[in-house]
Length: 392
Image (cartoon, rainbow, N blue to C red; front, side):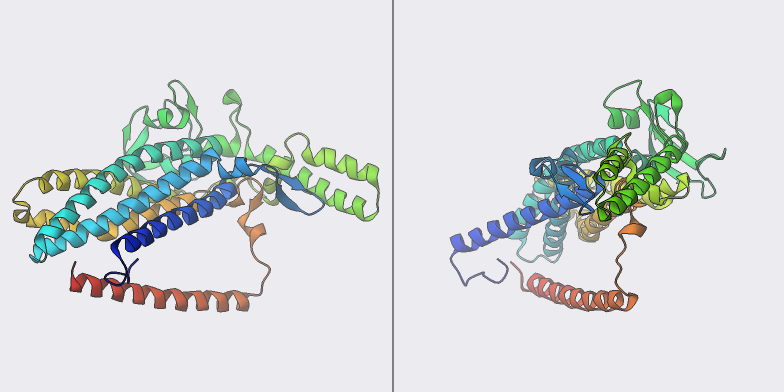
């Protein structure tokens, strides 16, 4: 696709481009489905004989609402990043008065595609947040700095967290905040007069709204771990009656669903790093709003014949190129930091999932990957800069 210009026919080059696009999106889909399973494990059942979660329904995994929403939102963010890149490079060409006519056409395509992608990300982000509210309510609470749950909760449009705030204390969670009323409740529950749980509700429980506290889940998790241990002992002794009894305890009373809690010692351990999750989420949302405005303004101006006169806007497009990457990384911070302490939601904490390899092996692997990707990064930057210098 990249090196085939003037070396193959236009149709073959176009086919190569489409194959790269399709292959990239398919790759992203399976990666994100795997990640979504870790955040919302569905379509599998735990086998105590193999100590593995084994697939029981492929379609439940491949077409999970959580996974599809994550894919659409993440790929949409990638489309915005690409549109910003093309928009910025096209603006740079126009500022330098180089291949102006073609650069303007490229600018219009990027602005149009970016506008559509931004609106798509707006709606897919809403659905993604709804799925998080249903499957990972603690993450949503951290995203909004919501400690005490509310009926018709509002979204924090802008705010500064109180760094000394801890779960269960009486301190105010914010030093400063501006809220949009009802918005969080609508997003999280798809209705009015519904309760959105906060961090304290999820840690300590809320009997009024039927929310079980983490302490009770820890008790069930420890029962599950003991039952699993008893099952292994009974299996080694070939005691089928004891094995059956252990299985009933393991899979009864929601013990298995809370297996991961058994590794925790304190209910407050289920709280992720609130500040990092909160600020990353709001950086992502703020940049997403900025992108919609930028694409709208540039698309409007692109329809005017005197686009070259708006040099400040063109320079703004150039300097906006990195912001797409920032927004995408902020979104990934929300996704991965916000789900802590879980490697697999409710089933396995990160500490249990950690590799048993020696630290030296890990450092060697890390160093090799760091060198390899640094070399690839430098090569890619050089290729892109060279192509930009050559022109269209």
